[in-house]
Length: 209
Image (cartoon, rainbow, N blue to C red; front, top):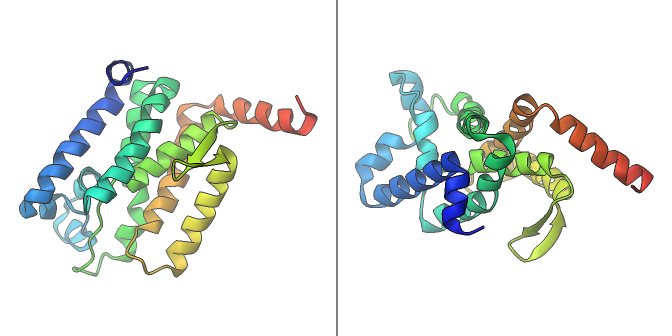
């Protein structure tokens, strides 16, 4: 399926993709837009600027940050919309943007110097949702190393949890962790038959089917 066909078949994913690219690139050149959209828990709580929980996912820190998120998004979000449905994908993506930042909001609400940005929480939700819907999927770690989707999911959640407690690398591991968990929970709500997909997959492994 070429790019145009992908966009036509998954219009919600396409719109989010285009808007995120445009706003991120514009924010690189416009510090005022960056400041207005960024997730600053102190401002959100004090000024009731709750929109930042969503707009922070439309901007990125640099071109590498943007490229990593959008490449991951492109390879998985368009397929996920075709699996879940249009409005279901919108709910999962937007909902996970909000849910992935709640712990950050609570933890840093009294720190005016703390800022966070990027779509990583929502992209994490997309990745985990795809693995749930297609549990026999093989992913390419770093686009080179083949890895079973289920193993990636476990390793990703485990590492994100560990890093959220121990790492000081200025990466929002908490957002990754809660984005991944949000993806799992929202997938179960939006596509309940995923339980049977997972059940059949597990039984196939156990009984060699």
